[in-house]
Length: 493
Image (cartoon, rainbow, N blue to C red):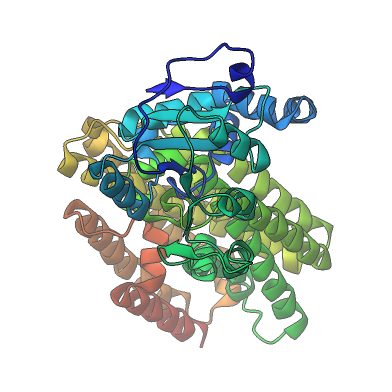
């Protein structure tokens, strides 16, 4: 395979040229065409994942030119070519053209380091045209490089974006891959025929999936302090909690998006997570960054309506989740403690939004219960790892042989949460809130049953990847919660 710098060619400093075919050569774009993603942003997220402080260098690199920026990001954010989401329709088209004896060249504005890694991995190309740190081969510059390719008299081009319109205009055949209708119409101006390959991406559906609205169910924990304090009819407090619920949901979604963007490589190595919108290339990284910024701005704007204490709690939650996404999730045991803390912070947020005084018992119960559930989450992941005979879950610090000890930690902690509840029932605070506090003892065996049952389900490998979501959507779990509420109501009488 040969790589050619068209600027260098004018100085008679070229590499060996590839064979020239009888048919028009086929030039294939990379970003959004061969791969269902953009390699500039892929390398950006990979670099930020490894060295977050690189964000401070980005302005200087950008001012040195887009080609230089791409080169530095390619150096700092190496991406595994074998894990990228390739467009199988484009791959099939390339294979069909190669069988006809046609010369196929990868022509991209991405940095040459990245382009050559991908071309080498696929083994489908006769050569590579790419940016080189000084020259950014986009649109007209790429067209000039294509025309300068040895032996090319006419060519066909596969692309996907408005920047490709100028290239399509001078090609003998234009092929548009999952291209917006407005761009296709622009490319077809003057009666040119544009062949469309593949269905356009379902961006709205993918965006909703990326927000993970089902995860918002966790935020009902915000209402727990209000209910535990037996405040049922103060509409102003309920309104404050509703605002807090929406703000937390928006903030959580922004973090889910950022987490997915930072975890592209590990998600692509996971049997289920590889289908997430960003990992699969169904949604662009650029769209994800815009979504994350918009969501966090909206979240903190709403949070300001609930006052400074709630705003501070949301800020701590956001910073802690960012720390978790960048590094803490990879540290054994620290990750589960942080997860338990994040769940408990939802309860603290409920106190902050309503100005209700926090109680030791509720916070202690929540922390132990959620630590147990966080351990259950890791246990379920390790069960899957053992089934696949892998060493450990991607992006985590656990090994397959940690399974048994993780199970012990989680089951014991869940039992301790029930013990805290039992101790709480005997306090003077309970006597003030409940007419028949002894009835509350009925909750203890019900919770013991539920905790034992979910661990049994996890041991069988049948647990949802997020136990909290499972608890809030599983019929039997909801039935258990309903029984607990009924017992608490009976104790109130």
